[in-house]
Length: 122
Image 1 (cartoon, helix red, strand yellow):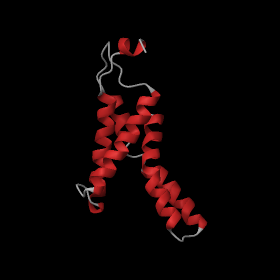
Image 2: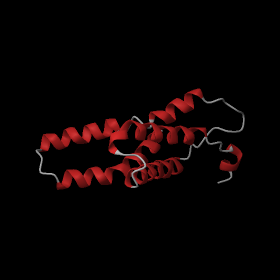
Image 3: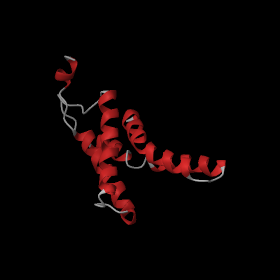
Image 4: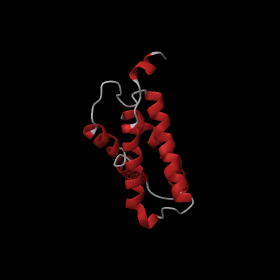
């Protein structure tokens, strides 16, 4: 889950850094903004943990455990969320819907069946 969160942070950090860099705000406001960003971006990733907790265990699937795949999936989900906002499929007024859609994408990642035997060959 950590790599998924780090990938999501990496994808979201560009816009946050751009806004903080161009804004003329005091240092403590920047620190507060970064802390709020770290906390607020963690909420959608909780969808992954919830889906892992309620998932029905089977014998041959465990879900994606590869750290590079989780990092890439986190970046991909961040890019999908950015595209949804860019093309105004989700507006800033619908911010909670955006978080729920992102959490749903994270829970889908947790439910993806990955064959352990196939991964062991790599």
